[in-house]
Length: 85
Image 1 (cartoon, rainbow, N blue to C red):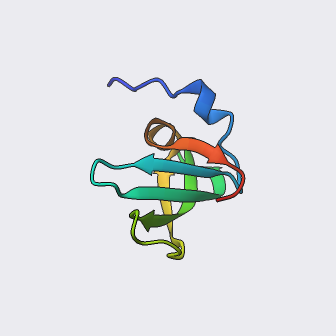
Image 2 (image 1 turned 90 degrees about the vertical axis):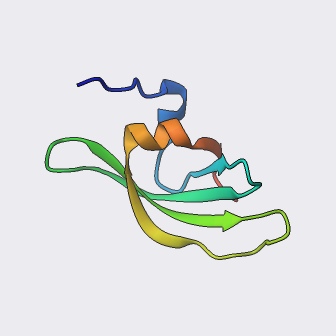
């Protein structure tokens, strides 16, 4: 089985309270807030987070969740955007 290498620059920023974003092609922006990071029973680290979806004409929606992704998948899909959003 082949695993993608996690982006090391993103992993160092992934911690409780940090914010990340993902831009979609249809002008939808996901903003996520990290709630926690923990290993599962197999030792694989997972990120628990809340997500807010916004379009340019829609602002102020609340966070939804929690949701969970493996740390490596999270790092491949989201970009660090700071400690507050």
